[in-house]
Length: 443
Image (cartoon, rainbow, N blue to C red; front, side, top):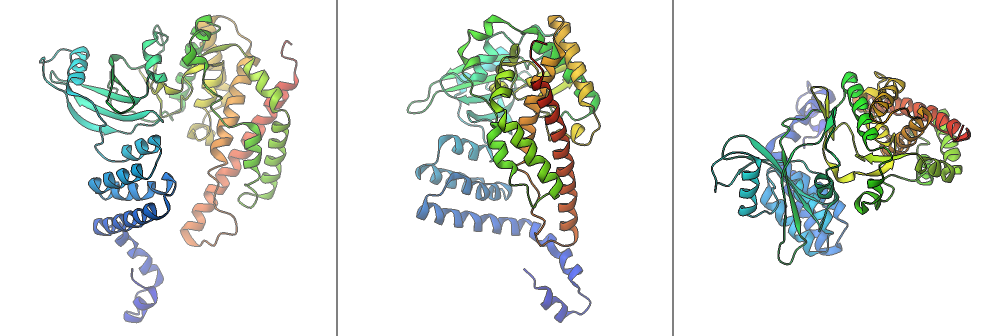
């Protein structure tokens, strides 16, 4: 890398600003490849010496994937496997590589193609692109071109009976007027000798999916989530399905958030830090009461993770996918996840929570009849707060004392102001939750 002092010595016209403009050199393909090789070599030496946590391998794999060095990345992943890395972490590492498609036999693919639509029998679908898949049991997500035209998505899950497989095959996700899930063309279990069984789900290809961020679409989604929750509100069948009721509480506990809240001092304004600590102390002090009140709400079928990346709206119909987090839970929970930070429509105050809650209530009542709006509000706000705080408190800006100048200092300041506004808003919502918990439930 060039030295700014040497530049000014060799040419008096060059200034520090001119030197900074040369930082694009770091983005050249050759430089990226060199950085990838350096990171990989360092990780290999560290693996052989210390057997570090798999998290230390991720940066090297990302560097190699960005530089197009897929073969070297695979070798590094195999080395991590031989040094005792967890299989879940190994699957996450593989999914970072472009074109990764997992393991599947040709007969399974041909049966799925026959189920997906008309085409030339005996022909195997052609993989087109590997897609980003998330989840501990997800091995790969791949788009295929079918022999007779059209496309389908294969989602391969590892395990004897993953939750998402049970969800698609249960029939609980059918019959919606304003909501649906992708069509399931075919599902098949494939046993691999000496390995954990795999399930292959072949699903409708929804094409390009944009994040759900426009206020009008979020209101449509809120209404549809209400109808979805109302359709199974109080359904006794849900309690008889072990894969819906064995899910542990999928979010941080209030006492953990209280401890995290103490880390904000020095990164935001003192008055915001003081108010947040007081609010989290009050929530933690009443955590048992709040949780029991939340779990005592009427239960329904919940998607579990309807973030703006896991749902989309097509023609006034909400399409939900990635069903691996579905469970039986309190009414209002799904709306809290949808509107939690970092949803930009909420963060930038382009959308009113009250309007969304009203749309959700209308949807529930359209499917299940009159409901107690206080119960909906409590379930929504409890889930909203815990998810938003858990996300926000691990993404704090650098401390105020961080030495930064110029553009970086401005970016830190902009982020700090945004975080302060979000924390202040979440403290307001916490006051509403605590106030609702003070009122007798049978009022």
